[in-house]
Every structure is written in structure tokens, then in C-alpha cells.
Length: 287
Image (tube, rainbow, N blue to C red; front, side, top):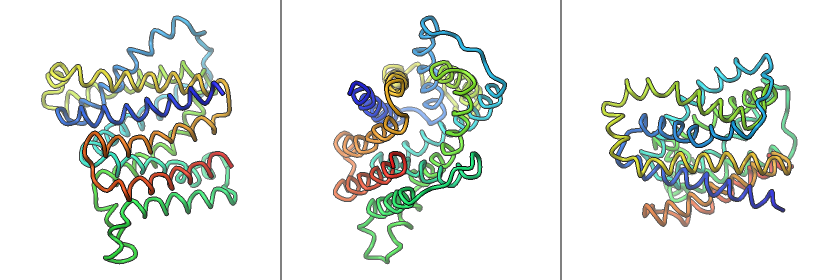
């Protein structure tokens, strides 16, 4: 059961990354936050290159790195913006839509189609998103969905979830043409290089913001790096589907922590909604 401990630590540090990001975004903009997340992560992960075997790179590695890295760099900015403008307990559950979108992108990209359990998972994810805003039901049966999409944070996180459903397939190509740890370090490094000029251009005082808030920003990259390491360790001991399913517990953790630390309201609706959505992910990934 060591894999479960590693997977649970993956979920914990993923949740901490979200919480620390939310905290840091009170003082800096999303462009500076996005770059520092990737920069600190690659700085902490790079020394591992001294202890792993450098793999032979396959033909598809560089294309996968360029496309996945570019899309994930855009996603990092959108992710930070979503966390900045809305409650964690409302935005983070939208990540569960990634496996739902995979049921659309995977048939197109790799020819995989959902079975009955996938359909049940879709229903649970949609139901959970409805429960997140169930208090709006008095304004009409579709009001919870409308209220959710009217908020910038959840709307942006849905875009993030969709892009992740594309990059997940690209990451698989990158992994197959290198190795898991090497791919993660290369991807984090590529995103860091790509986001640096974006941060300088779009963030008025990016470097100054980072220097001033270094103590707040460092835990974001530190948590992200630890999450990556424990995820790789867990995957090395069991099936990927098991690890990702446990990792999604970070959504429930973030909802609880968001309500406790940031005094976010509505936990009575948001926590059950998040749990239902995570159950939907379990149906899709495990069965």
C-alpha cells in the first residue's frame, strides 16, 4: 500500500499548491504567479537529473514538448487567473471536467470510446457541478448552471480542464519518447522559458513583485515539485488510473481548506458537489 501513501501525498501537495497560489495572488498578478510556479518547480526538480538515467529521445519528443509546453503555459496563466478572481471551493472542482472532456478528445486523438461506466461518470460530474450552486435552483432548474458559468473563475477553469484533456494525450507521447521524470523536468523547464518573456511583457512590475513576495511564492513551486515527485513514485508502484483517482482527492481538500483558511462561504453545497464530482472521476478512471 506504499503507492497509496505516495498518491495521497500527491493529492495533499497538489492541494497545497492551490492554496499557496491563492494566497500569493493577493499580492501579485497571474503572470508573475504563473512563471514563478514553473520556475521554482524546475529549479527544485532539475537536481534529480544527476540521479536518473538520461533517456534516448524518440522522434515525437520535441513536437510533443513544443505543443504540450505551449498549451500548458497558457493553461498556467488561466489557472492562476481563475484562482485569483474566484473562490477555491468554486473553481477547483471544475478540474474534474478534464476526464469528461477526455471522453471527447480521446476518441478523436487516439480512438478510445467511453463505456457504461464512463457515461455514469459524466452524469455524476454534471450532477456535482449542479449541486455546487444548488441554492440558485429557486430561480429556475437551469439557474445553478447559469450561475456557475457567469463567474469568471469557474468559466476559466473549465477552459483549463478542456486544454488539459488535450495535453494529457500529448504528455503520453512525450513520456513514451523519453522517461517520466525526464519528461516532467523538460516540460517544466520549457514552460518556465516560455512564460518568462510573457511575464515581463504583461506584468508591469513582475520582477519587483516576485522579489517582494518571495517567501509567499516559494512554497507554490515547492509544493508543485513535491507533488510531481510523489506522483512519479506512486505511478512506479501501481496503475496510473489508481494514482490519478487518489490525486483528485485534492479537490475535496481544497474545498475544505478554502472555506477554512479564506473564509469562503457555501461549504454545505460546495463540499457535497465536489465529492459527487470526484466520484464521477472514479467511475471514469477506475472502471
